[in-house]
Length: 268
Ligand code: HH2
Image (tube, rainbow, N blue to C red; front, top):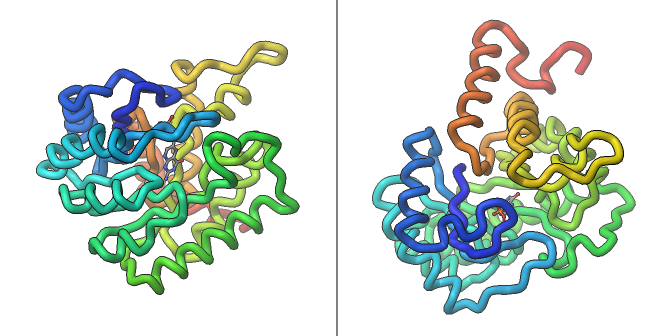
């Protein structure tokens, strides 16, 4: 899943694809690079982001959804029912629901659904997030969300632990470590870790400030390889060409006899 942010303020690519023509051209480039799905969003959900009015979000995403739908599977990344519904009417067939509120929109429009975990809202989610057991709480919330979506009539469902959405560095790492268990629960898993801030903190030399988003490609690829080896079904990434190349290593290695999944490896 390649990311197309039609926003002025996304944490990595804000402003680069804000005009519809630039966003469509970028989406088509991601398809050429190997994306099976492009995820179109018109509202940044980075920590502290301000909400975008519905009219403005519709104005940003609809022309892009419509143009790209003719060429590739389009997912709509939103928190708003009206945006999800309008995007489905323009050709989107997957709702990337970062609010856990859009199951009925997806069901009504015959679309698939990504159920992503978020604690709080983008404005406050990083204000001291706490869990007594982050893995148990996030997995059980996703299980309940997937069940509710199935009951609402959604046929294609992905669950996503929501890396960086109301989580500390330690929470993110615990969730990444627990991917084999999440995959084993049976609902296909989607992961979005591309260029996120925890990578910049982990990779910075001791005592140095975190690496900026522009220097987080290597960390993003390492997480993509780990997630693929754990059996994650879809990766939401900014760098499609590089990720496709990294994932070829995983599938080539598996063809050459590496364990098909981390969970099936020796000792597990
Ligand atoms: N992350 C972002 C946005 N949407 N959707 C899912 N399912 N999973 C994610 O991890 C996820 C997501 C944040 O990344 P980005 O869109 O690049 O940034 P911004 O929110 O600043 O536009």
